[in-house]
Image (cartoon, rainbow, N blue to C red; front, top):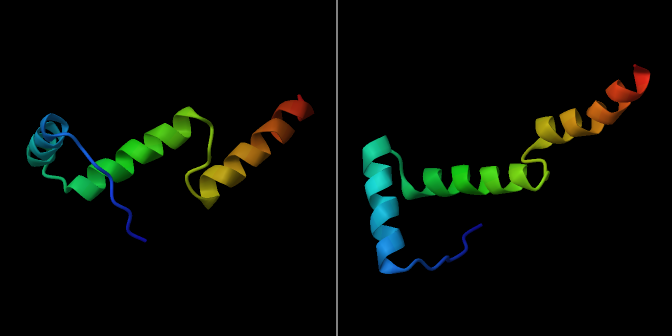
Length: 63
């Protein structure tokens, strides 16, 4: 799915340069940024992460 996101010129220039420095596409930088944002707010980023989060409370109850 495609969505449009607007950036001001300065932010886009910095993201473009970061992409060049890391040899990464803007999409890769966006994927990393959104994954970090979801993690920060405790939202699972994939099925493996969701399963790990759901099992964690059960593991703590056993001890």
